[in-house]
Amino acid sequence: MSEKPETNPHDSTHKQPATGGRPDWVPENAGAAFATWVIEGVKQTGDFAPPSTTPPRRRKLSIDDYVEGIQKQDTTILARAITLVESSAAAHQEQAQQLLARILPDTGKSMRVGITGIPGAGKSTTIESLGTHLCEKGHRVAVLAVDPSSSVHGGSILGDKVRMEKLGRQPGAFIRPSPSGGSLGGVARKSRETILLCEAAGYDVIIVETVGVGQSEVTVRSMVDCFLLLSIAGAGDEVQGIKKGIMELADIMVVNKADGDNKIRAMAARAELERVLHYLRPATEGWTTPALTASAITGEGIDRVWETVLDFFKACRESGILDERRRDQSIAWMHSLIRESLLNDFYQAPTVQALLPQIEHAVANGQKPSLAAAKELLALWKR
Ligand code: GDP
Image (cartoon, rainbow, N blue to C red; front, side):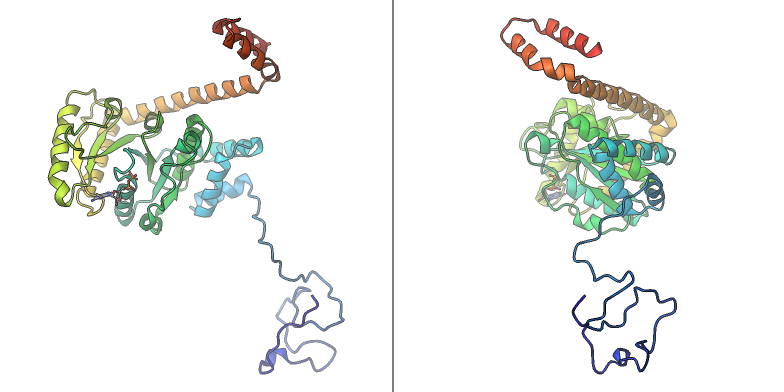
């Protein structure tokens, strides 16, 4: 460091030392790093270094650091752990699996709630309203999103807006956008693992939001206990726009935006939904899917929505359906991981990669039947 530090002539701490080049005062335990001033022409010794202009590198965390941080509910470490499970680098994935194995005993204690609905139905506004309500009641709420649209359309449906700012300011809330890129299967794996991490970090309500693109509702349904479908009063036929298949997944239906001039229409839509629900197979055995109205903006009906979620959990705990559903989900998840891993192995195998283009070509030209080609490739892979 060649520059003289700025000195203030009125500041007595910057007086020149009287004798021996030693300042008047040094802190106790002053090491070589303690410098009171720099005298030009005198070479600095010790480990004193000028302040760096590059930001410090983030310290690499060990599995123990992650586990400890998560158990202490440190959100910075939780966020880094989620980034680790979302990484596709082989080394990170291995670390992530070790971490998940360590935190597994602390998981499974939350209420896992999925929310879906068409864009504009008011999902983020509802989650913000419900989440804030829950935080004020002392819950710790994690909000995750499953949005594979970023890989399908090149732009995210859920993630672009500035979302849930009010909820984000609640100390008990943790909001994580959808993992990006990759297939729905890949996004789902990351989200499932993120649920576990959040549970280990003490979040007792996990809300997983998704939008109706492709199979994402079915995927989210398979990772939550309770599935909530948000709709709005439509013009004319109230059930228009809600796919019957999606209605069959719902444990609770909410007609949102039941406020102002829209309230009457929302109530009519609710009655119509209830009528249709009557004819559908219930999503959860022993539970009749109710239809409610709410306004995420005024907050009216939001507490009723939460009471209904609690009723659902009470009924499912008592009947044993909740445990059974989670067991089935874990087994189904295992099978989907096996499928994913086999597919990966197959397509990554050098023999398959070498021959795939020419076999595809032969199939495309009608020189080889698809089944024979598939068998040939599988035989090559298994060898
Ligand atoms: P999302 O796409 O499903 O997440 O929908 P948003 O939460 O972003 O809401 C879409 C629009 O509807 C926004 O302009 C909201 O302000 C509005 N909105 C959401 N909930 C309500 C509600 O309960 N009442 C009214 N009047 N507007 C709402």
